[in-house]
Length: 219
Figure 1 (spheres, rainbow, N blue to C red):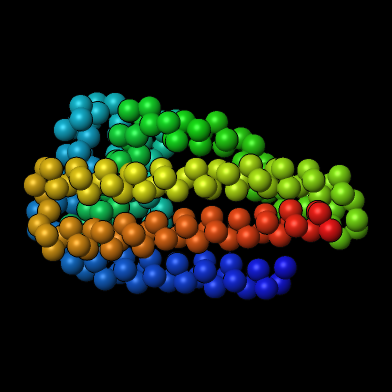
Figure 2 (cartoon, rainbow, N blue to C red):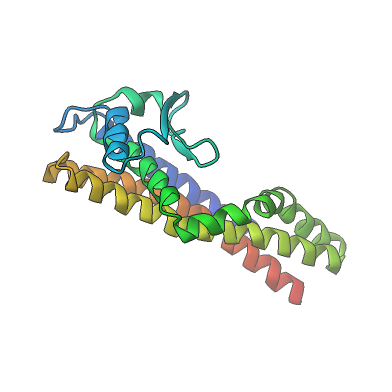
């Protein structure tokens, strides 16, 4: 268990360091089109006729960007919202990619929404039930913990294709609209790949914990 904890910590911290390093590099590089993240998001939404349905808001924090499907809002952190960098272009286009998925009823996005309630519960109490059940020898509690945590892990695994698809949509939209040069495209790929790596690291760590609990339950 301790070895898994160390491995997961190294993977998580490594992925976060790589993201911040990559983001820092490309946030200092101005994009060729000279437009802000908010303007990028607005242009893509307008192209798909969604500018009247999906709004764009600035939010505090760094790398706090996300799409809210309930309120249909693309929330961009203040640096992304106002900067004219390659990084801001990449992140804004990625978040709009989620809005396009929502508008197109992208199946994995619907699956993740259905899993969200039980995944929230599973991520919070599932591991603790498994650890306590394993520690005091209550197999029933261990099994319940495994099931709940398994739902949270499944949520993370479903998230992976969603994030990769949003990144693919982002780059395709920017290229189709003629907003990027080959140099910009390279930087955008670096930023999007670094962000995706954090999801991969988190999912891999959760899978390792789940496998540990499953093997422990069979002993």
